[in-house]
Structure formats: C-alpha cells, structure tokens
Amino acid sequence: MSTVRDVFAPAAIFPLGFLFFYTIPYLHLVDYSDVIPVPGVRMASLAGLGLASYLVAVALGRLVWSTSGLAWPQIDAERWRNPLVPPLLVVLSIASLGALALVLRAGDIVPLLAANKETARFELATRVGYPLNAATRLPIPVAIACGLYLLLARRASSPSSVLVGCCLAASIAAEALLAHRGLPLFILAPLLVCFHYLVRPIGPRLLAGAGALLIVGMGIASSLRLATSPPQLAHLLSHSRLPPWMPAWCTAAVTVVAFGPLTFNLVLDRMPGSTPFQHGMALVNGAFGILPGHQPVVGEFVSRTLLGQPEGSPGLPPTILGGFYIDFGIAGIVGGMLLVGLLTQFLYWRTFARPSPWSTFLYAYWYFNLFVALYGDFIANDFIWALPLAVYCIEVAVRCTSRLRQWYPGPGDGRPAAAT
Image (cartoon, rainbow, N blue to C red; front, side, top):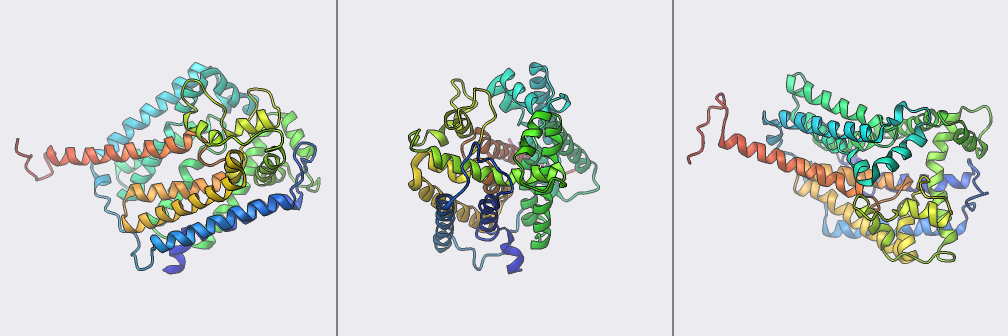
C-alpha cells in the first residue's frame, strides 16, 4: 500500500513534472528566438533553485506534519448520501448554467460556434467585462460538487446518481462552449485525485498514461482550435523545428509544454533591466480581477508591459516561478517555493489526519494547480481562489441539508421530529 499511497504525495510526481517541463525548451523543438531569448544557464539555475526550495520545504514540512503511521483516509460520507443533496445539486446546476447562458446572451457570442474560436473567446470577455466573464466559471464548482456526490454516495444505479451525473456532463459541455481547452480540466483533474483517496488508489502506470493522454489531447485540442484561425496556425507552424511530415497537433502539443518556460525566460531577460520588480502587485492584482477598477494580472503584465503587445492581447502567464520573480526577484522564487512546499505538505497531511470531503478536495485542487502553474501562473488569478471557496460553500450547504433532515425527517425516516 505504501507505494500506491505515495502516488499523489507532494514529493512524488510534481518534481518529475517540474524537471520535464523546464527541460524540454532546451531541446529547441520550437524556435521563438525572434521574440523570446533562447533558454540558457541562468534560467536552468533559477529553475533548479526553485525546485530545490520546494523539496527542502516539503522535507521540513514532513518533520512537522508527518503522515507516517496514519491510516488511509476513511471519510464519513453520510451527509452526501442525504436525499436532499441531489435536489440541491440540481438546483445549483440549473442556476449556474442559467448564469452562463445569460452571459453568452449578453455577449451575443458563443465562442465554440464562432468561425475564429480564439478571437471569439477574447471578444466575449471584452464585451461582457471581467465580473460577468467570471460568472461563466460558475458551472465548474457545481460540477465538482456533483462529481464528489457520485464518488461519495456510490449509488451508481440510483435515479439520483443518474440525474446528478447528467448535471455533471451538462456542466462540462456548457464550459466547452467557451472554447477554452483548460476549463474542463478544472473539473476532471481534481476529481481524478479525489477518486484516488475516496474510491480506489490509482497506480503509477495509469497516472503516467493519463498524463501522456492529457498532453496529446491538449495538443489536438489546440490544433483544432487554431485551425479556425489560419494566420495563428501558420504562425505556430512557422516556429516549429519538428520534421515537416509530423501533423500540426504535434507542434501544438510541444508548444503547450515548451512555451511556458520560454515566457519565464522572457521575464528573466526583461526584469529588472527595463521594468522594476512589482513587490507583490503581480500576485495580488489577480485576486481582485473581477472587481471594478481591474488591474492587469500577471499574464497581462507580461504581454503588455514586457512584450509590448496592445491592450486586449492574450496574456502570457510566466509559470509558477515567473510570478514570484516578477514581484521579488530571486528572493521571491526561493521564498515563494518554500511556502508552496510547506503548504503542499500541510494539505497532504490534513487529508490523513482530518479526513473529510473538503480536505480531500482542497488537497486535490491544490496539487492539480501546481501542474497548471507550470504552464500558466499560480495564485495570480481570481479563479484560482474563488473556485475552492465556491466548493466550500456547497459543502456547507450539504451540511445544512443534513441538519435540516435531522430536524425535519421525512415520513419514511422512522425518526421523530425534534421537540420544539
């Protein structure tokens, strides 16, 4: 059991993904040297420093929050088996899907149905503004809650599970209308980690296969999306160093993996020479992105300030290390990765020491976010912290329905109502 148990341990997979991600640009499979400097010794050194800081923090965290001797999480899922929970999830699903439909109507555009999906996605965000654009993500926490119900209730053949499963599928399909290849992953990937702890441990082979399938799938999705915009696809292929006989989706898959570290290298090249360090603004601004008086998040800062792109251009997230560097330089990388490692170990320990659906999801979401941050950014996005907060609110609502059932039992419960 120890080998399987450590599959999602904080020191197991993330360092391997980190090494793979920050090493692949040195193979020069894509050439953006006309815009971004070729990665060199400095980038490799700072990437190694960030990884070392993370591993040191995990080792220190294990001294305080050790999981040795703790049993595999045994979660009491009785609250989620409450008959009032499926109606609650259905109501929330309808409300979130309705909000998404209203935003699409207000923007008068469905990106997936547009001729140029890439342009339509940014046009929708521009038309409706940041607060309404954030509302398009509401089906994601509801879909995660539906997935948690299916994992916890374990009533595969019951009508309630079928209904909740339909809500989960509808939410994924609705998010696909936004033509953003990453949004369904925010539903499925955390649920995969939750499955590991709530239902059955996942072995390393299956996990490695899922990772490879993810990279290939995102490459194919990127290629299909860019196929609606021939100029963008031609620009991508013109920077490819892959053999010409390889299909376009291979270039897209390689770019997905290699472009993030190249963006980090752009940050290292431009700062602090042309632009001073931001001293916290890069990471803090994103937390308030949906409020009036929007400030550029870290991806917008890189594309506009460092690369000189016009307003409205797609952001260039500088990866997990880039956000820390933009704010505080090398000290930011060391200190930020130390905090990340400590919090990762703490959340991992908490899933064993205080097992619950919420603690399991929070660790699953955090761990998934580590891998997302290799390509994008980490906490510099309002969506990053708003999503687990929304799932927690649903967890609280589930608790309230359970208490409501205790105080006002149904006719078939066989329990007397509480005395008034």
